[in-house]
Amino acid sequence: MERIRVLIVDDHALWRRGVAALLGSREDIEVVGEAADGEAAIEKVRELMPDVVLMDIKMPRLDGLAAARRLKEEMPYLRIVMLTVSETDEDLFEAIKVGAQGYLLKNVDPDQLVTAIHQAQRGEVPIAPTMAAKILRELAAPAEPSIQALSPREREVLELLARGLANKEIAFELKVSENTVKNHLRNILEKLHLQNRVQAALYAVRAGFGGRSSEH
Image (tube, rainbow, N blue to C red; front, side):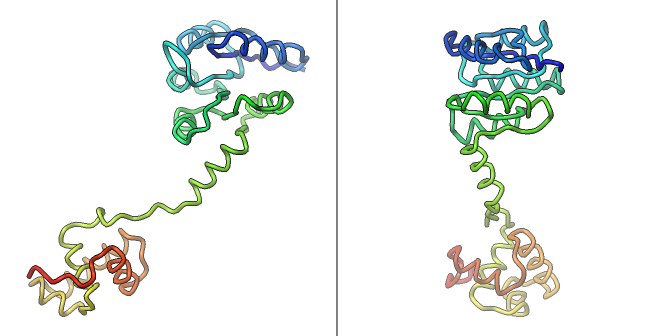
């Protein structure tokens, strides 16, 4: 069996050596080196060419996210697993953005850490359950379309729509053709991800457009 070559990057020497001792006792994993910060990690990766890097986030000189970004740009094939105490959404999504293969918390069970290294080596994505839940929530939450997406004229059309005016009346108010109003309405529905003018009118009322007096 070919052993997985692992580099451990963490600014806490005691933690680093503990993980190295844990992994070093296994026949399927070889700890090829250690680094205490992101700058040293980049040098070590170039020198040792590991398969998997276990990378802390908060470190002096160069943090783990910045180091991961630089390493992935230079060596896209490298598997980097963040091993951190940080449970913030910001660090999690930044890690994914820079190309980290996985995201584990330091309270991970030793057997789970070994499994995660194998998963990363196979191209799978080991992520701590609590962090995976954050990703799922983010993916499940629909992006809320913003009224800011509308042009000033489209907002005027939406305001008149909320007051119950028909296309012909809106056209008269704005001194444009009825066809132009239809085009504006089509754009409004698309930008706000709505199906019809009834939904658009309800959206407008909820957004506080209803009941305003026209400026025209």
